[in-house]
Amino acid sequence: KVESKINALTEQIVQIPFNNEIATRAELRELSQYPPEKPTDKRVYESILMFARENPGIKMLFLTTDRSDFNLDFVRDELAHHGIEILFSSGDCIRRIREILGI
Image (cartoon, rainbow, N blue to C red; front, side, top):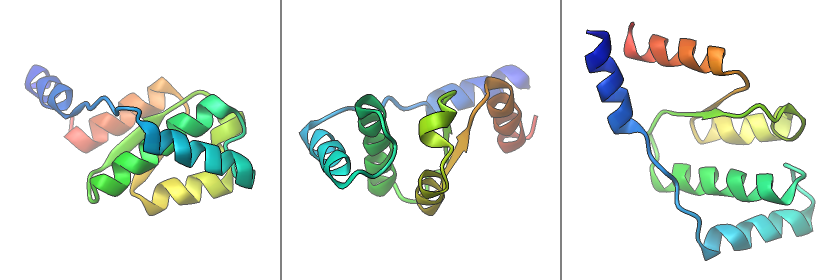
């Protein structure tokens, strides 16, 4: 049973591509001085937001250990608006996945 749940989860994992539009959005975020602070984090963040905009209704979990850039009310609210749950530890992520899968 657990193996079939893991296989089902594996089928749901998506690699989000990076493109020019995301790069432009990250640069605009930089010029506007919106968080996250680090340029690389801005690109990751904009990639996640774009994927969420293109795929409304998909439950998304975002795992990062970078609390300094991502554990901000503005960021958490924007992610939540797009149905993205942010987690800061792999243990919490595994627990959340187990809850979602019912295992």
